[in-house]
Length: 280
Image (tube, rainbow, N blue to C red; front, side, top):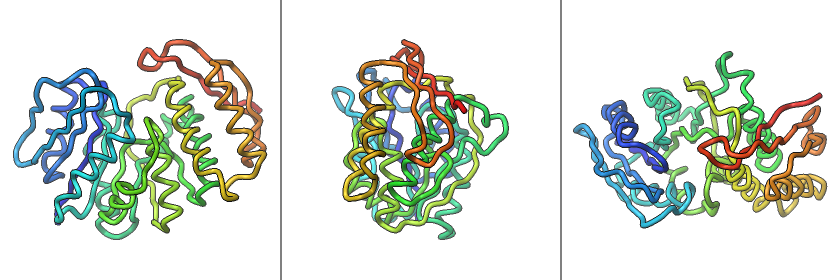
């Protein structure tokens, strides 16, 4: 029985990757790092006994594709029983992934998702509005209720990893939402576990909103969403692509009140970004 992890590395510094590997060296027997950036890490320093494999591409391929390729590489080891995925930025303490692994290893769940918003200090953050918006739409599509649909820290069984590696089709930042939808469609049991987290950005990159909307729309057919719900998602996509500010009535998805999408220009990671706020 071995535990492994996949790290899609984008805009990750040398010391961030070293710290991540050091803090998980006694948790994982192997790790696959997929460099998804034009900027290269000069070398991958890592402590023994963890085995590290690095997949490098000449340019960005999108987080979802990087994760899929990393899973396919990791699963070549037939002894891997539990797989984790980690973001290289370390906003969630890497040690907390052990709690997720324990839930999967004990068969409590097929997929354990980190919940950044379980602590009171995270309750009022603007970033939470973004997560809650997608969480409700995912619940309608897939019948899976979670609090934090887009956190990048997760652990799952080998069987779930094989489903993700073979069925994920999204691009960019849509992978976390697509995984939850695939859990619903494949009858996988999902649990959430509270983790620590650094303060999240008060804004969300427009590119992330577009990627998540694309995933939701791609799974909206076949009666998963009604025409009004699909039209609502299309209106959001149109507004974000035009970089407009607008207010969304949440009634189509059974949410009270309104959500304000305010375009604020360059913010998160120096990208075009939106600030989302709930309104009564």
